[in-house]
Length: 240
Length: 221
Image 1 (cartoon, rainbow over the protein chains, first blue to last red):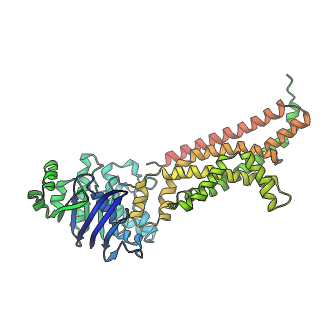
Image 2 (image 1 turned 180 degrees about the vertical axis):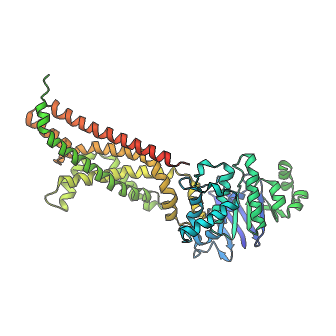
Image 3 (image 1 turned 90 degrees about the vertical axis):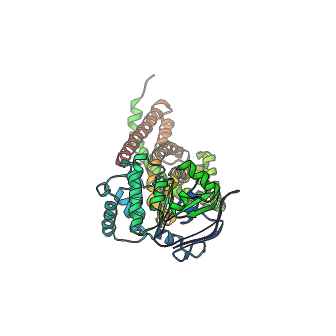
């Protein structure tokens, strides 16, 4: 589903990603962990070209993002993204947040888009908030709307960039619950997170990144219980 | 000091007509300035330096030189190239539009750039083109933030339209000077004109405050 080969990314002189290669199969849930500054957020942002890359190839569902002829907007409709700070559109209602892209990008009829949006909002437990504005929602509710908004485009892959890092602790659970359900429904997901419990329980594979490299990857149980590399051990000893 | 109210009453029809023209040219100036200003702002925010350059030059010239100089050049230099004899009202509207466009462009740019970067990213991540994201997500939010500075710009423009009197455009100040010349009096015409300007700008201030309140209650982040 996703093939990343020799991906490189620099900000000026600072090389953030040094030769990242990764293959993700359909329906796989890959959790990316690592210390801050390791490049994990940059990596996930490269996957839908929110960052321009300096080298390597990214192929999503058979389409090469690095090919100049590829229509990047079209690929983005297949790749849902959930941000740390939600980035809901504050001037739109919750329902409009969810229907905006299906109507304007997919060309869906308003009534059809709204019907679908209501189903998605019900799925994330926020059906009754359809007419509200984002400002009236809690952080956890905002993030669940953001997930529904991304799902409304019927993406083949969902990317989560530290989706619970900006939340109050008591709100983390409700967002992870939605993500868990999504994984159970068979969505292909890449999740950057500090929630080790989620990584262990939901992840099919855990990737440890440090200093722009993938240092180690394995099934969650193996990686958490028997890390092979010193840096992985050092990191896990601090967070577990 | 004897204040001759008869001068005020004699000239009132002219003052009122002048006031209408002052309102008209200022409104035309700010409306054309809005359209030009938005285009200039978008041009200035281009990622290419070469595209930015002419817009930067435009803004610097029109903000960096006195409006009176601009009006004289436009009226006696530029407009005669296209129409003869040149019409002072046309020159005044052109001058006000071009000048306000430079200021409005900077207001728009500041408003657009004040919107969180994540808004553009979220819109693009949903597959919107840059233009769609601008139109559907960024501009609607920016418009609210630029209403107060735009209101100020409108008030400034209304006052600066008095420079039209130098071109003999029959706006409010022109009639003030005419009355002053006819009666060889200072206080009556100029105080009256000043009061009318004051009524106009205070009404505008009130109107802008009302619009701001309406917008802030409808919805916010």
